[in-house]
Length: 334
Figure 1 (cartoon, rainbow, N blue to C red):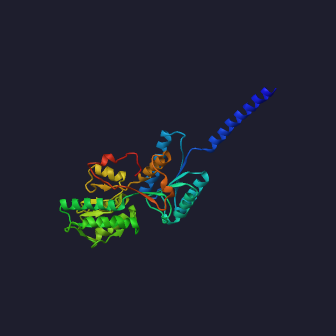
Figure 2: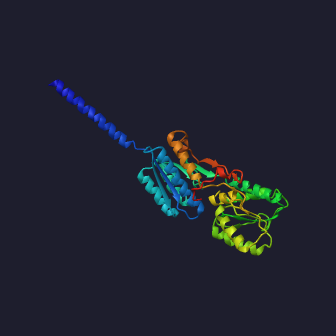
Figure 3: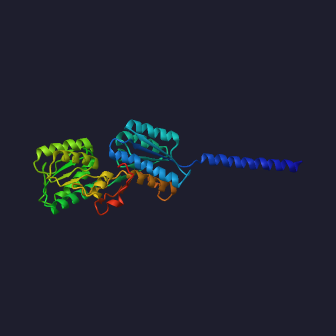
């Protein structure tokens, strides 16, 4: 009888262990990776969403069931704050976020960090730099430098002298780009900025504003040889204005970011678009892959306990006829 009782107790104990193990495994869920990006309001942000979805699709196929992803697209900073709060309730372990605006998003990202979420912030950083996160972004000064060097050398080689320049918006990264651009342009004394010195107008990274500014320049300046507009969305408006004006004196238009449209113009030997400099929305893809490397232990998560952000800077590369096929993705929306 005692022997039977012992056997029964052993069975009960074994079942209890199995059950406990099952509960433990249930509690240890797969890593949850939340991704918060803006909804498309122009080509570049449309590309951000497309590349985020592309990364997740690839990783779900490569690691079925190993990770849990949730991508949320927000049409404004208020919605994005709400999205991150929802991701915290969902139980995310990692956050990849491209802030709609830095200042209003900073408190909620800091709140997520305090709750133990490891954060990777893409492109524009946060206004609080007293806690640990990864800030993965393009190289804005290098983008300006690469652009200026190409425009300068192309103009000199083709005996062109007169140019106009457009910036994006009055923010830090715009200043970094434009200062580096003018640093390169002023190395060639024959080149003349028609607006004088280092003056330029802001195109708001907008196709419509690029169109309007270029229409004004065409009316104001009887001869323009080159246009630098810093952004491929703006470039679309600039090219439209030139086409509608019938002007033949303009020989070069240089945008920036590396849109599919710009790549196709380069591939097809467009008479005005010869090159672009990368600041591509695929950086969100790079950020998600960086996050996965942290989850996998291939990259350190020590950034989380640091007292300041860890910068990861992606290079800005000149893309022209020689290397455009290395960057071109026919399926990309940007």
